[in-house]
Image: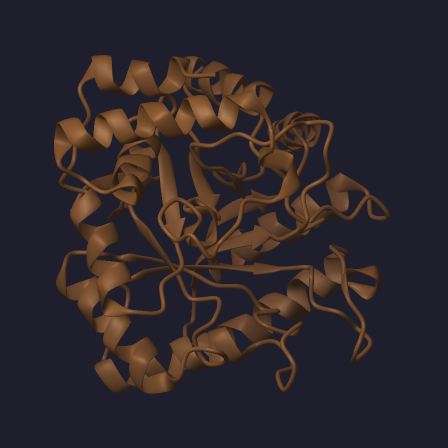
Length: 323
């Protein structure tokens, strides 16, 4: 297992997504997957307070509730770093993000407390603002997160699905007030790159841009490190499963060129396409922590084995330059 850091915390360089745990993935399977991940050295788990409200028969909060139960049953304390998110839970049953709770100071405080109760912890390891809420001043939102850190109930602050210019504004606001800055950034990202002029099917997803990566590198040069976490890192299995078609945003010549390079490096390393993709992300500059969602032990083992794969500089560049 590879490792990285979030602030002063050491975490695995592979993050296990728990989105479907407690809902589409039954408890026995989810527990076995978590046990295997931890056994292999994995100590970074991702969830949110609204997973999975959009699936028929569920209301949201199922993932956090399951993780809290798993922690109690296994006697897990602070050795596993669990990051959760708030702000995107609908306030009206049967609706979507159009009625999301948002990021007011009141919502941030209340939602964080509910997450702590469901996870069964006194202190959340990391808490993200799940989506943007431009109806609330950024100063109010960042102040609310800072208050939680000051109270000792949140460790690290994160921003997910925020435009790069909003990251810079958050940096300026937190610096002006001497508040904890958001060091965790979560976005959609994988090896294949979508067209910027074609909307993603999942409209709430915000994709990593060259500007965002440039922001992270520039910040690091000034001594302000960030950890970038990439969801949908394996594009729902589209790299290896013929039944998983790529969406329209990936329908451009660069996709074929990148897949050819991917197959070339996979042949050289003896690894699978998925493993090369995960290694490419981990070996990037800035390094990216892939977030993987799995439903079988074979899928999890494939991802874990990818942490032992280190690409040569030539292999990484061959992949990066394909377009």
